[in-house]
Length: 186
Image (cartoon, rainbow, N blue to C red):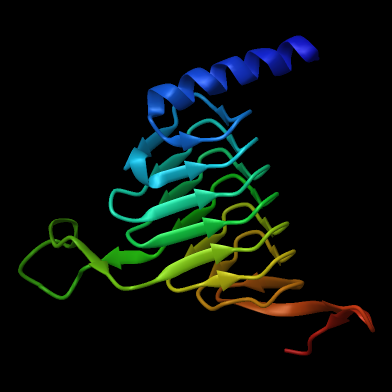
């Protein structure tokens, strides 16, 4: 097991250098990852990027906190700002963006109209978990120790210590020190 960990660390170090991102110690970058806007991507210590991750920050800043893991085939496309806290887990196929495609010119294909850039910021607090196939889009702040259920679409902010599910995602449970987990009636 120690040999495997050492090999991962060596590969991570090599891929970090090749990627040209700002990185702490113990980074692992899986095979076939695409990192655009390298100078705008900051990976703190022990961040794991699983294979086939795409991170695009050509104009925006992306900061991924220590010990966080980005699952296979995740795509992150940021034109302003994304801050992922420490020990955050993104399951496979999560999509995060703070921008959208322009569509209003009916004479031009959407693909050729460019991107709508708004002054949005996305953040995910320490210790949170984002379920498989979830989408986070817009000006969204997800609190610390939150859970976003599988296949959810997050378009509004979620407070600390909450469980949110659905499309659009809605908080269905919240934790308080006084009462523990409380179920919301929707």
